[in-house]
Length: 100
Image (cartoon, rainbow, N blue to C red; front, side, top):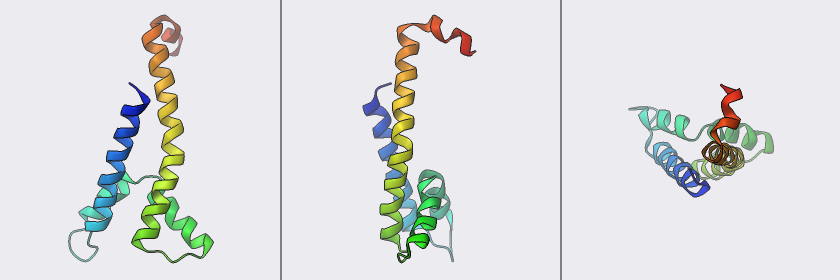
């Protein structure tokens, strides 16, 4: 799996999370907030904490921007790590036999 594919998966997940956050209704059907919580993890939670700690008003746009920045800084290194492991596994499968 290439880094490009992993980043596309991350982008789609973030877009679904943002759509869930924008369409969620806490008074009616909270499914959008549940989708946002799942797809914007961990940035969705951390952004509220960071914005409160910095004294910035908590609003949709601020949460989305902060969530995307946090998620990019968390998931990009994980995507790079997955790519390295995937490449090592496809190049020489016997090296990973000790990990099983």
